[in-house]
Length: 211
Image 1 (cartoon, rainbow, N blue to C red):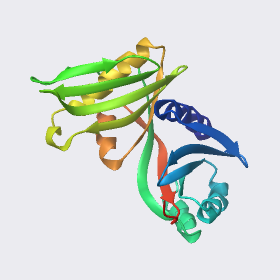
Image 2: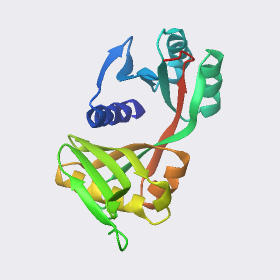
Image 3: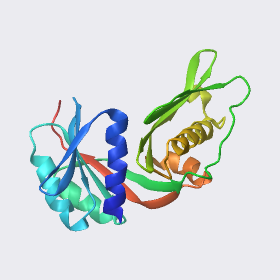
Image 4: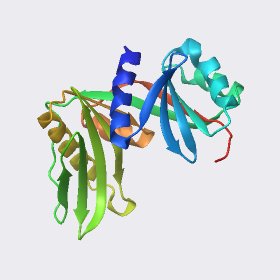
């Protein structure tokens, strides 16, 4: 099941960022094409972690490896043994039915701007300044939240809930039923309050090749 959900999530990520992807030796590989990250491998099979880590460690360009797992300690040990550096050890893969997603209005003084399309964009602004923003890519019945951010000066005002509610509403209008996202440790608190549920953990590592 995790493999299928990861495939659905990756389609949304690729759509949101305008990337391409392929399968190599049975592994999902996304062409990120950035100076610090050319490719990112996504692995869901715990038996393949060590070998995938060796492949990424031996590559000549800066590449990353993301492992969806409920065995963080074992995965981290295998990754580090292969020579990779763990960049994000404790992210969380989450999902939610979007039909009843909470929708919150902005606080006084803030306005919500929505860009509609297969990739929905939401900005919360105040006095012309962007306070919070996010994307949600709709691919079939799935919608993937991406780049959910709140500026430091505007945190603790519920703007993350405003962004997520607006994204979910637009995604449902575009035919989406299920939301998927990867969350940082801090973000899990927000998403849990909004009814998102944990699927599994995520460990992200990189090789030591400089751009």
